[in-house]
Length: 132
Image 1 (cartoon, rainbow, N blue to C red):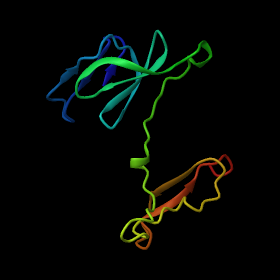
Image 2: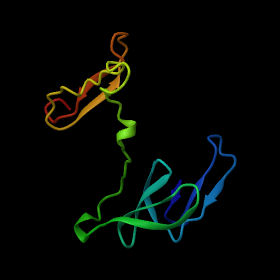
Image 3: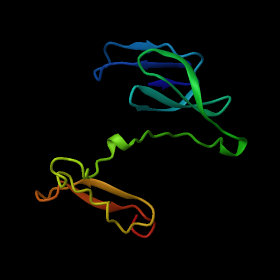
Image 4: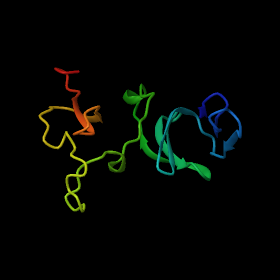
């Protein structure tokens, strides 16, 4: 969790026990996301996206500074190739996961969602304006 009023990061178990503060130098988090071993957060004054180790804390390294026009960013989401399943032709069984978006016709975004169909574990969902 991040708190911009108290200027801190903390973590806890799902039941609220084992609360621990993560030592981050002078954070003012507006939004946070986890990606691997890093916490990425939108920082206020000066507005920027910063990252810091989720295990050790420290000084947030600036990933991106914002100009005055971009100060309305209050959300962040971490995505990586590792959490986007796709077919791997080098895999022992190349059809082990047929990604429905590999041959898509979406103009903007195609998402692979869980399917109830036993023959295909994933289904395609187009998030283009015309189908959104």
